[in-house]
Image (tube, rainbow, N blue to C red):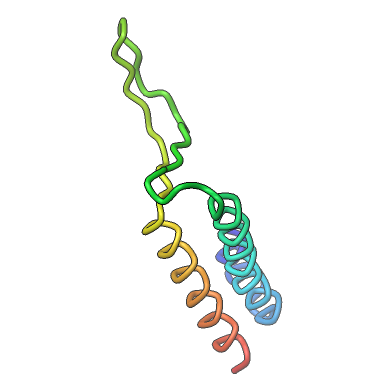
Amino acid sequence: MLNGTLALTRPNSKTLVSVIGAGVLLAAFAVSVVVFSAFAGLHADRAGRVPVLVVDSVGTLQVDFALQVDQLSLVMLLVVTGVGSLIHLSASDT
């Protein structure tokens, strides 16, 4: 949202837009590394579950929106954010 607003309101600030775009992905990669290191010592069969939003709760039934982190999602998290940040870094040099 910030990049879109800057691009529309200040068309000459291409450097700032590039820094924000690459910086956000580098920060996401750093968060991915922190999450990976937090799960590195756990058993391979364990998966972490983080409830984000409770949608509805009726009696003993609880419907919620949650994120699950397991080995495959950790690897994909690192690959996607790592490659995405490298793409943004190489694109911002041009």
